[in-house]
Length: 329
Image (cartoon, rainbow, N blue to C red; front, side, top):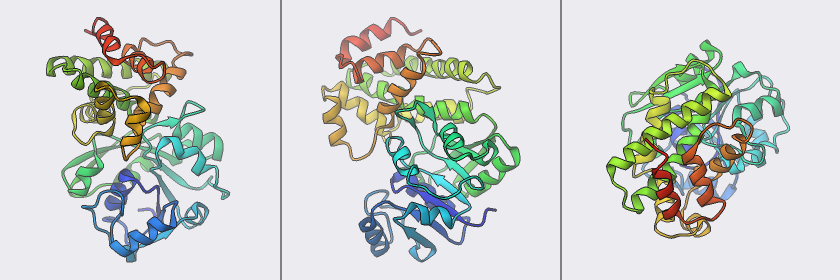
């Protein structure tokens, strides 16, 4: 097992991952940007903003609001910062990263560059690809806090490193599997949020379960086409790391992207929905990133295109969704 583990981020997913890792590690380092949040965390023994059901032994946590301090004292970095803020946070790092193992739990892309996080880490910090991993699969933070049985897929090009990473996240209530398909898992993790927004919109517009099933079955086909065009590696798209993640994000009450879509379907503007939500809906940013990336690939993505029209071209949801229904099967 790795010696010194760090969590980068303070949201619900970062908190859930910290809970998991602390079952396998005697102590962890944890970067949280705001010192006042750290102070409240230490006083309460839990994250003051997220996952109140999860209690922590703060004596085993080395908190810091200085990302360079956390990086310097850690061998493995678990990156769980929302995608809109990843680049801003990482660009503050002044330490050599070439010997670090970095596991991305980010469910989005680097927005202004439209690249997946592992590609950005590889190019920006010269981290070898065999030291980069991703976390995927149907695993809501809220259910981790309640210790409900969950499944994670750990992706890494190096099999031994993938297995070591998987052991780090394996607990009685989290089962782990490994995969070499880093690119496919990352793109699937980005795109499933787009489809969850669509599912939420359709629910608000009174489309029933029958259509929701068609929507999500077409969604997984879009992911398969796009991932194959980007990197035609062997992958089983019906595996829980792909299909399972799409289903839980599209159907679950815990899905913030589904909630975001419901609000838009009810007539909220994008800005109003974002202001009312307490957490980032990654699918909003993912929609633009995938749409822009697809200009060079030209894969048929009718659901992504429909979401782009609504989210960025300010088209009304109802007619766009109605038009979309004729393109699915």
